[in-house]
Length: 88
Image 1 (tube, rainbow, N blue to C red):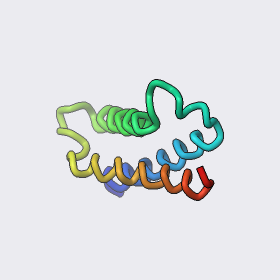
Image 2: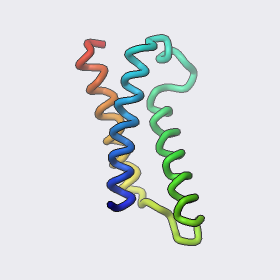
Image 3: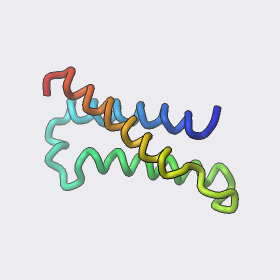
């Protein structure tokens, strides 16, 4: 399994987790850092771990920018879907 596929699965799980947090703790929407930034922070953490496991930046970046953008959309879609299906 390539790093891109693992990344997409991670982003989908991240989106569901952020959506679940927004449902269970409605006050979290009022924090200074919005839920979209939570997703970006999760993506950055994944990439940092991927770079560490691949042996540093000597091997090149683990993902391209289009992969990152698709991952962001893959993370935002379940987050919005969870919120919409719950009626929020």
